[in-house]
Length: 241
Image 1 (cartoon, rainbow, N blue to C red):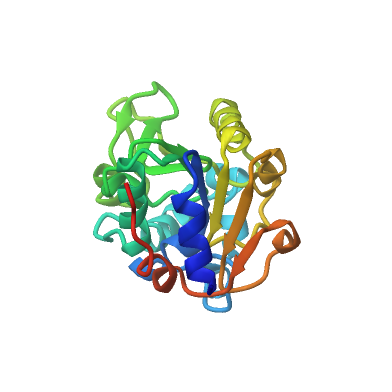
Image 2 (tube, rainbow, N blue to C red):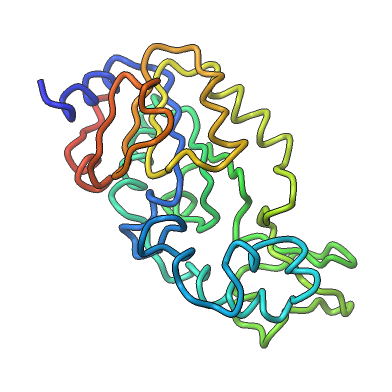
């Protein structure tokens, strides 16, 4: 039995599946990831992306922040790929109970998935830092320079920047979902970002599967490790209802 067949059998025999995904889930839609050789962190800007995507930089260099943000994080015209679509089928079957994602691109939402836990927020929600008024992504990405509210306040994306805390309600729900799962599928993440990577320590179920092109610090915890492109893996799977 090859690895794809083993994964298929695990999925077929599970009733409470949780999917934990990172940037690699979206790369086959044309979105660059962050830490690979050709990822965003290896491109050249006046400041390193880690600095640009920090709370302090947003507050002190808002115009430069938005220059990078609009250039690199606009996914309005990006479409979901085979992995997102497979997960929608799996959710519809009743097997997939939660998608926990570190991505802010909104591609899971575009497929119609419902049970999504956004650890780092989403580009599709934005708010005025002064009065709290909500704005959509189109308003932000189509604005000139820094998007501002009608009250004059600066509009900020509802994404978790470096130096900012994760939303504790989302974290609690993610941990609870992992704790209750019988199968945890981890895909497209280096498991190098904390505290998110540590959440898998709450898993008490039967099988952990890691699907990633490169090795991760948690490979020895997994029952199955597949070092292949996600699209190649998920295109081979079927949802047996």
